[in-house]
Image (cartoon, rainbow, N blue to C red; front, side, top):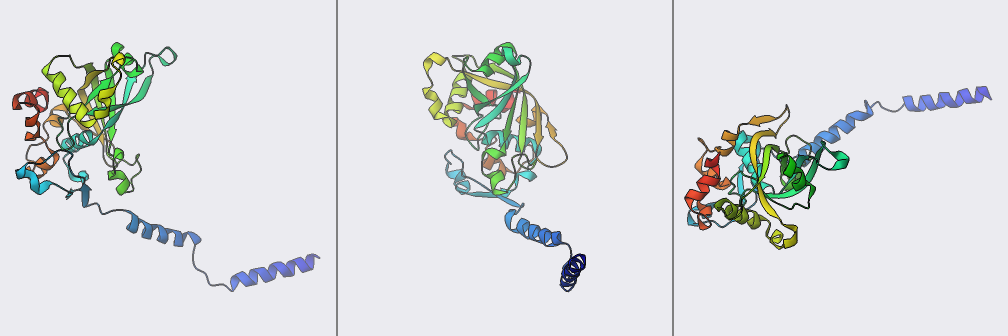
Length: 277
C-alpha cells in the first residue's frame, strides 16, 4: 500500500511541474487593485459643487447652476474650515456630562446647526436646544463643548470614495463655550432667521419644551484634511479668511455677500459675523 501511495504522490507532483509558472498568486490581485483604483477614484483636480440654495442677483447669475472649481484640498485652511462649517446641517457635540451614571465623562450628542445660508455663512454655529435634552443640562453646569463637522455629511466624500474616517474627508473641530442667545435682541433675530432658514421644520417644536437659541463662542479650531496630522487655525484667521483670495471664488463661497441685505442691515451683519471676533 505504501508503494502505491508513493506512486500517486509522484504523479501529482509531475502533473503540477508540467504547468507553466505564472508567478505569485497575489501578483494578479495587485494588478486588479491598481486597475480598480484608476476607475473608482475621481480626479483630484476638480470637484463639482452643488448650486447654492439662495438666489443670485444679476451680477452673480454667471455662477448659478453647477460650479467647477479647484478641489477643496487647494483652499486656504481657514477658508476650507469655513466651507465645511457652512455646508454642515448638523454637528456632533461633546459636553462634560452631568448625568449621575456618567458624571464627569465626555458625552456626545447630535444637534442641528446653521451659520447662515449655504454659500453665505457667518462662521458662527447657531443651534436650537431644549432644557429637556441632556446636552443643554450639561451646558447649564459647564459651558465647555466641542462641535465636530465633516464633509461626510454630503456627497463630497462619497463621490471620491473616501471613508468618513479618511483624513481627506475633511473634518473640523470647533472648541469653545456654548451660551444662550438673549431673547429680544438683534442677535436673537439673526440667529432665528439663519437657523430656521436651514431647519424650517424645527419651528414647530412643542412650546412646552422651552427651546432656546444658543451659539458656540469659538476659542480653538482644529481641522484634519489630509494625512500627517491636523491643522490648527486661529480664531482670527477663521473669521477673516478672505485676504488675497480671488473675488470670483469669494463670491462663490459667499464670504461675505450682500445676500444678507434682504434680512439685515450691513451694520448688523458686520457686528454679528466676521467683525465680532
